[in-house]
Picture 1 (tube, helix red, strand yellow):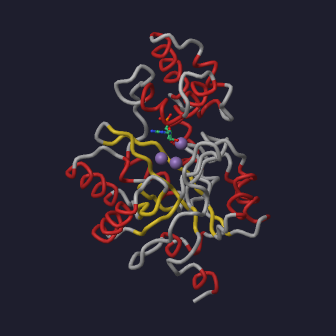
Picture 2: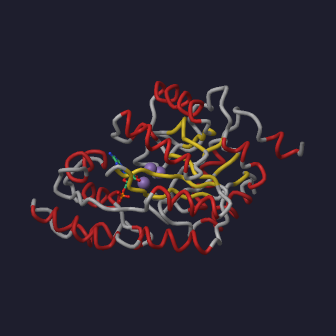
Length: 292
Ligand code: AMP
Ligand code: MN
Ligand code: MN
Ligand code: MN
């Protein structure tokens, strides 16, 4: 057994394998995130920007500069059973052309969707939301609901971003525009064909019936998916237990990540979640040869 395999074989590792930078809808640069992760004791880190891997080389270099191990990462938006599902990819080749093209296609509809969101908000008297959201965008191709939320907080419409989502940006609300993202099959294929591992992000967040959730896990596995987030900033302690069981039932490896976006907005800081429960295979054990 090599030294690196031994070092990453335990559940007791401060791995944070899910967070966002200005390359998608976070507010910090990859370099500032790396410094924050290091300061919080993170040993193995991954930056997982939405539908975009443009920050990967910077993040890997910043991890190295801070003495942390690194896995390449992304979080792909998928439509499954009429719901948006997020698939995290880890350990893939960031220069893989098919993956880059797939992500470019996934980003493609965001500008049009953002203009429609802005039209919806204008109908309830909130004017200039598209231009307002753009001021918060680091990467115009990645304009997201998060950027609209920041604009509505800045302009005093709501006190915090969670209120904006509840009142304006979720299904049935004036700024909500349904969108078709990548298919589950495509997202899993892009990741696995680039030598990475596909992981279901924060499964407790989806509003699925038990049958739909079973179908998600079954199809995900059939397409080659290998992992599920068990300990995430989006789960309660009971949900850690529930999805630890799901991981065992489906024979999936388990991941851990804060989903940190911003010091002002995120409840869970980098590297501060509980360790993975015992009896699970950590994703980093299967990805040992891809850790930088
Ligand atoms: P989009 O990809 O444009 O649909 O935006 C999705 C992003 O919005 C997620 O990645 C989260 O960062 C953020 N988000 C979704 N729901 C909420 C919520 N209820 N409160 C705060 N942020 C949210
Ligand atoms: Mn986000
Ligand atoms: Mn997500
Ligand atoms: Mn995320």
